Image: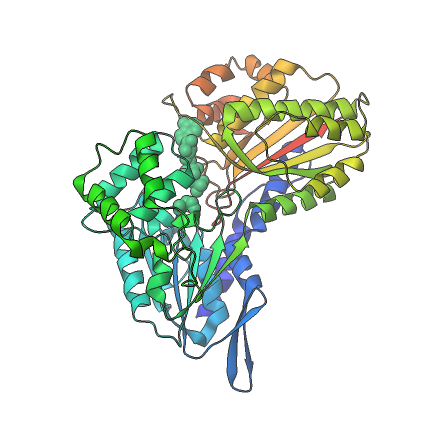
Length: 517
Ligand SMILES: Nc1ncnc2c1ncn2[C@@H]1O[C@H](COP(=O)(O)OP(=O)(O)OP(=O)(O)O)[C@@H](O)[C@H]1O
Ligand SMILES: O=C(O)[C@H](O)CO
């Protein structure tokens, strides 16, 4: 029975539609994106990272080259948007060693995998957190996860599957804080523009399972967490609010954040009480630097660097000289559009033979921008070998932000694709053409059914012919409707839920020839 479930999963993964005809540049961009998303499919990541061996009646669990003797059974808990595929992978790998498990997954995900027989599994699949917001259902799943891990002994192993969206899928407010109060605070922080580090610092302080607490409850069982990172730089204490990692933040920092956004004074008494208790409680933070997490091993099994490297390999196979410029892109989309246009300017001067390879590197090194460049050796060696006759592919990854002031429909990737195209239009490149794909690896950009969009240097010019004014759409945060109308939606990238999530991928093609998309 299980075997057919996994075969079905394979066919589902393959069925994700990206459009793979290679005749046009937009299809090349889609193909590069597809390859990067495929490389971080949670099911494959788990299967490649975890295995079980049997020798002389002793069973060993192998995780990333580390082995653990299986004395009793293995339990599984999990929470996050990409945890379903991870669970399939672990269930198949563990086979009879799997005792039982509970995973908290996004609402609707089971229906869209209706070919799977979830009822026959030893793992209980629980849906919740509609729109990435904690709710009664995800709280019930959290209670069941807590109940399961509480009863484990020193002979047990528990595998914790973690991915982005895990914070909303593992809510258990501390003390007398109600779910509504917690939800309201999280929403307020989001609306004030708090970043994920600030948001999760607060979450950890008011939650029973976050900030390392889940791992503490699992003790004395061995805890092995498999983490798919959706946060820049893979900070383990931040991803899904670090339920298996010692909490590096503290109550003072939480209060500072709440004061920074003028939220502290109006907090409900229940939250203030918990913060006061935490301030006075030595127990909560004393474990930070000691060895109380010795029973825990955390492994990052996938991140945006892997996706970027696969994009690089595919672009190279497709005959582009390619370089990863950054995996840590963050900040406002408007600003990033300008920075990207400046970077493109440097490379286009190179292709026009106005500057040498060394001068490209010099200009990049002296580049005033918010971009944190990728591994220096890779960037330098790759650009040193660039040829002035060959088209270039620049790969960047990360998670920009949009301050939404309009009432249109869109997402940060569609906003960036259009905004960058407008920035390119201002600069009027003479002898190169530029094409750009910006997409969320989860396949869903903002509240739309598109992963993102494709922009290019003459888009503004072409949109005039259709009497479309991109600036109006940008201002109203209505880029989905722009791309839906422009050329009959040809430049929207629609792939559906991909089942994974390692933030966004940006691919810039700089072509010497005046080929149209
Ligand atoms: N109309 C819009 N135009 C542009 N950007 C928007 C619009 N509406 C929402 N957004 C952006 O989309 C973001 C939410 O999108 P999304 O759900 O893809 O990201 P997320 O919550 O970070 O989840 P994930 O990390 O899983 O992708 C918001 O932070 C906001 O910046
Ligand atoms: O769940 C969360 O906290 C975010 O997705 C970051 O991991």
